[in-house]
Length: 130
Image (cartoon, rainbow, N blue to C red; front, side, top):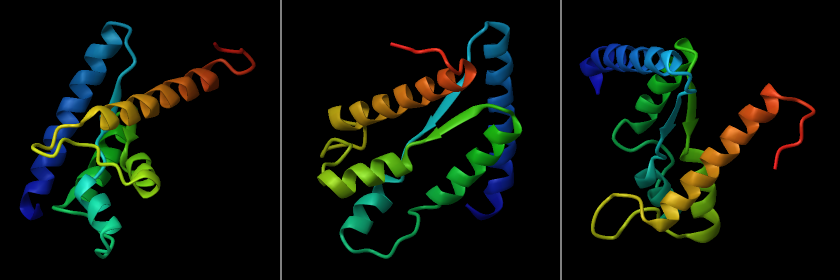
């Protein structure tokens, strides 16, 4: 990623701020959801040294910084995917391409639901939600 990182950070910052402002104008709370580093998760399970594949960890750190600075929520799915793969050894994508399969979508949906429920619980302490 080297010399491209600063340009990527500025592009991400611009995009996040534009989406934040648009969402605020329309009364919508914005949530960015970042995929887990599935190759690192699969490689780790196969005995590879821990680390990030293809600069994914650098991109995750950049998005944490950009969304934090813009006061926008970021849900990083890496830990959820990693923990699930450690338990189930079930991949999150199709064998013939890298799009999420049913399991990947289900896990992401559960994580998003938990995140929204936590945000609501913090916004309305003492209220019981169904």
